[in-house]
Image (cartoon, rainbow, N blue to C red; front, side):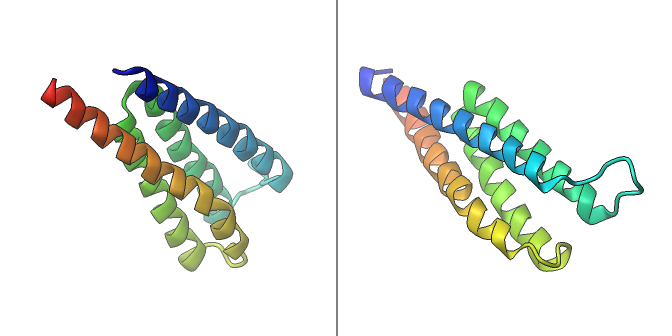
Length: 119
């Protein structure tokens, strides 16, 4: 990998780490109870977070898979907002940067695979 690709990969990893920290702070502020008979809407918040953690893990291993998982996370968020969460429209606005981040990571992963095949 050339120097600019390594720099861009490191920038993506730093942005992913910042997003993970902000996501955790959002969950803390949201305060979804897990111990008092949670509904599916309460549990789905944490399931969506687990999908994000999986995408974050692959950000360090395989950017192509990470991009796909983060885009799937964004699609799953839209599904949950429209069919499960009653007042979740604000989370769509908060999720747009992560969906865009997933697209950027996917494009980086595709270019990385293409450049490795040509070399």
